[in-house]
Image (tube, rainbow, N blue to C red):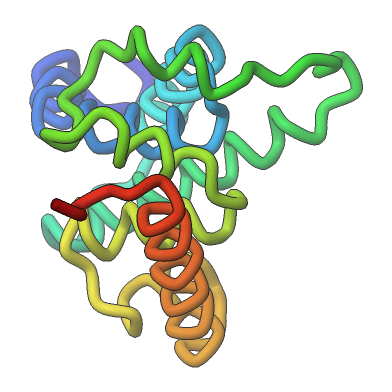
Length: 165
């Protein structure tokens, strides 16, 4: 085995601990299952080839989040990508979703920057400062996107009569 590569056991452990999170991020950004699976697989291949150990579990998790976001951005801007899946495909997701399917569909319909900060904040529990650091953004930009996402989601939910008696 080449020096610097993760062993099979280390890679399997990393995969078990973080696949669900990486896959969900990819799914949020790619909006379809096959592309999300490809992106998640590429992230773990890159982790295997990285050649460095992580400082601590938080560094490991942050690296995977940034790598997932970057891989999805690269795939989305690639010349061969000519079609985008609609949110109807989200009905067949293979990962754990919020208890209200309809609410998740509204989250998934938000613009990409809003979806990602909403996901990282509410589903992964990161603070706006942590999200800003991971995404290379200003914390005030992240807070602004989060506020915009909440406002858009609230308007959509009220428009559809969600939560009304």
